[in-house]
Image (cartoon, rainbow, N blue to C red; front, side, top):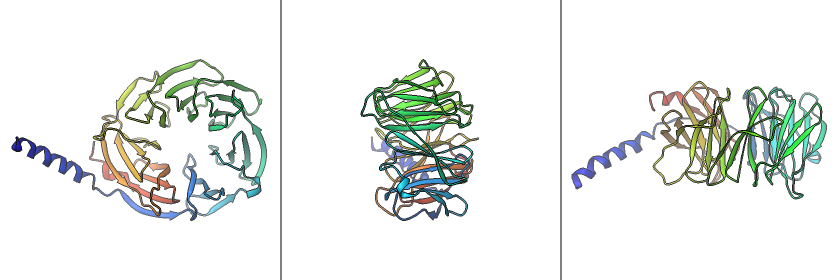
Length: 329
């Protein structure tokens, strides 16, 4: 029996050593020193928007790492639920409990305010997504309500497809379809303006992570326990399932690395994991650089299939060399 176990132990040791490959090129900068509660890269990666622990909201230039605009404190909501940058980087949306504040980044002026509610009186905004053409917006609520609003016509279609907070909304590349995923474990694809889903998927636990490819061909979704799949955006059918040794794994942020088979995910800990989307295999897990214990990744951006940049809750920007994984599947 001992002889049979010995080769297995050797294999496990070698597999563990394989994860020691170094991906990090180190920290390139720190955005402020007050910690990041909310942080997003712009779609083209040229800008960053952050909200820190003092409720200060800044838009940063990614190349110079210098702030280009800070929202005046007296114009900030008491609690920022989310921030959204338009695709062309000209519009900033600051999300409060029940109000969207639209800022022009060109003029650095507040343009307008728009209120949204749910079916229930206590509902607050839980997720917001602006269409690529910036003419439509989906405003999801904590009671499961979804608002589909035309910004030009100011027509809002409201329906309640979920029973718990809707934490994730993702548009397609044409501004016609969008995904919602909520804490009720339900995910659905919708055509803007219609309350009838194109398809739905249900999980036993709340959805904690959602990501889509830029061409809207497939998506990654994770629930709070042990269900993590990559599925087709045609019919929702599973294409692969992530594989790992642990009984369960917590997923937070996720990003498809375009023009590759790689998927990057973060956990509730200070960890970055890279996966093969075809096989579902875990290619490795690495610790991010931290200033404070318990720091996590708040957003990720991949300028190419060979490079990843992470932003942590410490405000640290860290670069990762994905080309080091070229021979791993």
